[in-house]
Length: 489
Image (cartoon, rainbow, N blue to C red; front, side, top):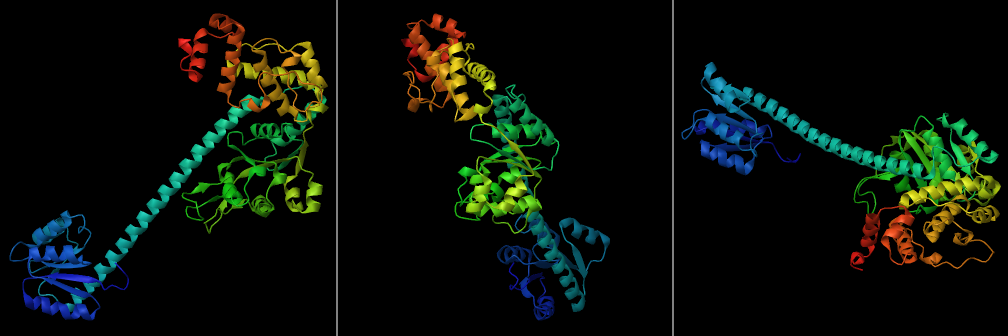
């Protein structure tokens, strides 16, 4: 009902004088007067006009008022309209029957106009408050459901992120850093110092590929937040126009393309750790907002007027010279000082070459297990070649070299000619698998690996399976996934 629309009162009475007696006072009080002189007419007027209150005489020519009320209450569209009976019967039996039919009150004849107006005003107000309460309740239920949906989405995303984080931690050996060098021991000592300092923000510096994220994961896994999510943000890949939405979230409709509510990375990392990787490349426009979160512990998603508190430990990593970045105006000094409460410097692999054999062996076992093959050894020549290389891509490059060498060797011992050094000035051994064609998908790599072994054994599946250390059925299954006609060859 619109606020400007007058409240409608339907009076049902078969005596015209009673209708006339009430029409004037009700209209003077600002109500819209409606009338009906029998039960069927009352039902019809109610369905058409949907009055706000019905004054219903009990004695009607076609059916009694109780029956009219029962029919009204049986109709879901009319059941909420309050009914007040007008009756000359004062006996308790009639009163009980009226309430049982669905009435909320009764007025005795002969009635006084003042009493009727007072009863009408009271019930109209009660009905309005009831309707408002019902609407507020519905809105609250919708809001609760929306919040429940957002919470469920967050829990699902956090669970997925945590699962991926655990898989990545296991893949990189997060529980035990690989290496025995003094340099690595220095890093581990730094990590152990800050693991329990939950409020300390840590800046991890070093070249690309040195394992800065590994250090961040180690800090998280040894902290009181280890059961919470570990959320990674690649700041270098943040589109400036979407950075605020990605980090802080947004409300549906807050901008073109925002077709649903979105949780930002800060909320996804609630009670956990947010790792801002390559923080030095973060768009300048968003750096001030990050600083505010670090200072106040609150975020404001796009489209919301209120802020939200977040309990997040922020770790950051960079390969940028912050002194130079501050001088050129590409990074805020105040944000740098907020982030760098404690600094962990991760050295390049060329400064801890004594760790290379252990790292190479670790990666070799890792990839052999993923491919379902026996782990081959590393020849003395291949280890010497690895030791002589400077690894500009650091640990990440070593990992890629070992993965490719395992495929090139087809399960045999890793020799020097199986190693491919992308940045070496020394002549490279010709490879049957050009770097541009090197697949990223592990299933594709495994298929190529097995196919090459079958070529070596002249198609003898049993011999290939024995050399690879896997079952014949595994070869049939993997090959058939890429070549449906394989078992017909």
